[in-house]
Image 1 (spheres, helix red, strand yellow):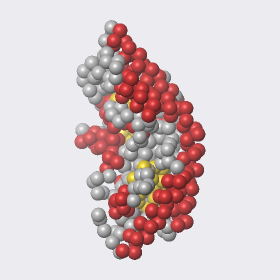
Image 2 (cartoon, one colour):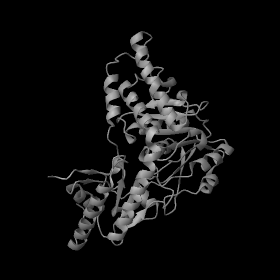
Image 3 (cartoon, rainbow, N blue to C red):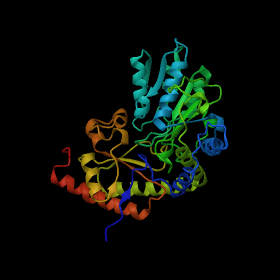
Image 4 (spheres, rainbow, N blue to C red):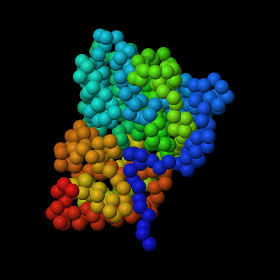
Amino acid sequence: MLEKRIYLDHNATTRLHPSVRDEMFLSMDVFGNPSSVHSYGQEARRLVDLARQRVAKLIGATPDEIIFTSGGTEACNLAIMGIADASDVRRRHIITTSVEHQAVLNTCRFLENRGFRITYLSVDSNGLLDPSDVEREINEDSSLITIMLANNEVGTIQPVAEIAAIAKSKGILVHTDAVQAVGKIPINVKNLGIDLLSISAHKVGGPKGIGALSMRCGVRLTPLLKGGHQEHGLRAGTENVPGIVGFGKACDLTMAHQDEWRETVRVLRDRFERDVLNQIPGTQINGHPTQRIPNTSNLSFPGVNGEYLTMNLDLAGVAVSTGAACSSTDNEPSHVLLAMGKNAEEARNSLRFSFGIDTTSEEMDRVVEHLRYIVGQLRRTGRSQEKP
């Protein structure tokens, strides 16, 4: 009998939860346009409003602070571009880090081509930012600080609340990309003190193609899309009702189980790392030892090409990745690991293992076995550093 395949790439995406699928399926019979005033439209509007309440509750926001988008990328674009376009023409300086997701980095690069000045702050060898570096770079031209809450590749959690306190004292807005943090650590936008926060449904058992931007009341944004009045006039276009319903249900489920799941997966991950380090000589952990989301393990295997190892693990029935899904096909070493001081070879020797709500200890034992065998074989063949 063939062994069941093992999925350890939950930071790329998660399985659609069966309860989410069921609720989305039922919502498809509600065909009215949520902007219509008749009963068909208002039935759809009720579903959207319920989902908005559920999403807001998960992150400690109020429903009127939630703007639905097509995903985390659009939410980050709306936050950064929206602030840039709405800011005083004299305030054209944005502060970010060198380890952000491409949704933030490429938006900032686009703004650089429009004449904005972007400061890309460095991180230490654990991927952690020093808040004093942020304070040092703030000047009278600064309009926005955008710092991710948890890194998608190594899991390091940034001191966003401390950074937000610094920014608030200087009158500067703060956006955080919380796509990888939602459901994995407690999030409350009020406690963080931030102005804008981006999240995505498919990272918490929801559908792809739907996300949200939480925007503090009083913040002024220029919309990316021109059209109707949907989403408080900030995101034109008829709402994706089934996607929004699924997002809301996924947040509801996450809210109910996240505390228990966080501890369970942390214990599982720590055991996995301990076994790998004990059984595979030379293995190194990338990311902060304690300030890290509980489901993420980024490991370096010296002398073994990460792409080669990923392919061999896939043949053995184990799905992992060499880094962010959005950049896993560009054959370039991870920009995150390079920013943490790794050289190109060390970055290419690394794999990301990201665990989910359904990951089991038995699966971890099998993965360690496969890793020990495959890494040993690749090192013995002398072909382990070749590109596949």
